[in-house]
Image (tube, rainbow, N blue to C red; front, side, top):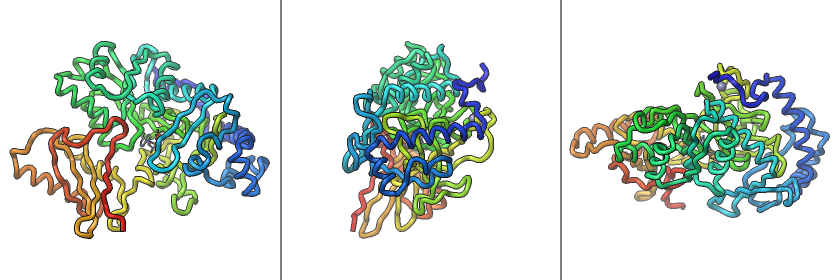
Length: 435
Ligand code: AMP
Ligand code: ZN
């Protein structure tokens, strides 16, 4: 199979072809946005009119759209089409205030399925494959998003949905599953249960490709999962506001995620100043949708921190590549004035082969001082070897201090003793007193 084979002609576009297409689509989108009560008002308030936006550079004139805007206009205030033209909505619950609602027309759903099919094709999925989706179906877009994409490609799909690990494993063996979609924390869980049940992924399954995403994970975590399951794991990035999965995806080179620039215009800005960052620097990802009907979003602040990787990809696609997500600006921990991302801690932990994949960072106030504890599961029981445990704890603490500049308390805990979540893993518990 030629892995450079493209699913859509737009994949082979040169930079100038992509930019020409983006310019056309941006103009059409802006015009269409004037049918949205929200954008109509936004443009008016800022003295902007449709004719002010005729080049990609003009995008800068448009104010950012934020998650708060989506909440403030809940449920349908940003829609650019009447509701009767919409065929589905997805909603994210959110922890505060109104949830956010994303509307789709039939054409939006069609484009979305195409984007996911394109991603899966890019990593070598073909109609002969059997695709098992371990995502929750329903409002979480990882369920239906991958379902329709995999069907579009023509694979036999197994909509197993989340949980019930034993049943997932039975499906792997009975149906000959070759491609799995799972969040990283669940991929590790699948392996643990395989070991408990004496299932050897190499001997007893046909698993070949894993699609992992939806939550930040380090390169070491990916390599670990690949070794455990004897599989190739590709990073998949998406978000409900943009549609869901299918926004950016690694190709077979595994060197960053191509973001589909015939669907989105990409900006990376400094989250404080909102100015563009210099090329290649980390900042907040800002996306403009350019082929959506129901609810296009202009300059949407994703809160996700990443950078654009320099250079061309050997796969022949010129669509920009995003680096592995560093986290969300709202996930950043500020402890004793130091900014820390949970992924920095994960990166250190995953270097230790004695450690399993699950960890929990707890922040609490101990006698008026804020402190961090990192509980991390051990792979095997080495609890009888006290001095080995102590040496390991010390070494982990030292490496964490070097990375995050404060000294956490490290506790090694038995395998499977940390709470497991069905959806995205909860890595941080903040119990600090708020003064
Ligand atoms: P949702 O809209 O609920 O699907 O959540 C979207 C968010 O999940 C994104 O804004 C990211 O913060 C996170 N996310 C999705 N995919 C990835 C990925 N591959 N790596 C890191 N974070 C991700
Ligand atoms: Zn590539």
